[in-house]
Length: 101
Image (cartoon, rainbow, N blue to C red; front, side, top):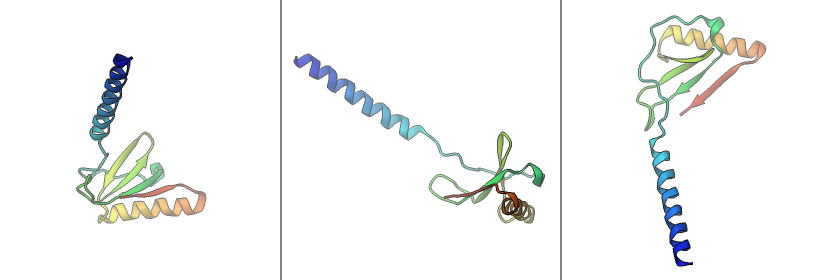
């Protein structure tokens, strides 16, 4: 009976250690640099606003395209035009926009 309790406690401790390790190794996806490519407004599905925090070092606009995400400089005039384009399309027929901090 005592060996059953020891085995149970060992299993429980292993699970706690494993879950702590997995939780600490999960990374947050952050933009590290901006694209210099032009992004056609028609392909933009939406965007997310990334702000500086413990995990992310730069402010960025993350444009959602089919199958990928592209980081853009929020102070760029081109980026602001693209955001306006997405917002206008969203207003007219619906779309995605989110804020992440």
